Amino acid sequence: MSRTVVLEHAKFQRNLSVAKQPWCAIFPLGKISERKAYRKKRLRKKEIKEKTLRKKEIRPKMKAILFDNDGVVVPTIEMFSQRFSREYRIPADEITPFFKGPFGDCMVGKADLKVVIKPYLKEWGWKKGVDALLQYWFKSEHLINTELVKEIHRLRRQGVNCCLATNQEKYRLEYMLKEMGFKDIFDEVFCSAQLGFKKPSMEFFDGVYAGLARGLTLKKEDVFYFDDEQKNVAAGNAFGFRSYLYRDIAHFKATIKL
Image (cartoon, rainbow, N blue to C red; front, side, top):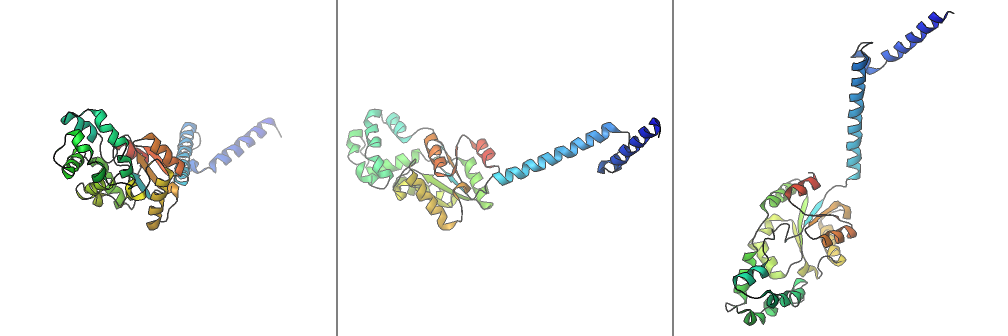
């Protein structure tokens, strides 16, 4: 067999192999650049599809989202103690001892705010009584992150359980539920005064998870948690929740991607 015949036979076999490819029905033999572009496009689509499937496998189903209160649902522009000091010209060092002392027991339900704050009224020069002071306090922090609340309503319509998880004493919690409409915003509210523990303790997260588990079948990794304090985020992650530092509404949307 001559060398020419061998070469022609090899060429025939190569063309036959090419003709069996699916893209050969679209692009005639000889248009190599178009065939290569088509193959590249098909490979790219396949890579994107595989990557999407891997993401779905890795990302757990989001069944519940926990939101911190101050700094997340309620924007922190000026704290009550700062406003009180500024408007009534009370030195900050006369207010701080209360919040670093007796107020801590109120946050975990071991003391009543109306009782422990009363002895400080004379020192602060407040003459309108305890109830009036608490109304002034709670109204001064009556702010709501409306963009986030819209997202919460949207998520709830999609079947995601949205809850508040806050370090809070009982009287302000009552105000938030009734006057700020939190009872209609959230599926459930978890409060340190009711749980008996504050963030960032593991006992706080234990109480929250137990509360969620009463109404939902879920794993810890099914729970997303947003807080504006890094120590609380770290504690949430250590407990097993998927915890994130809240920055703004755009970052929140990008994080949940729903």
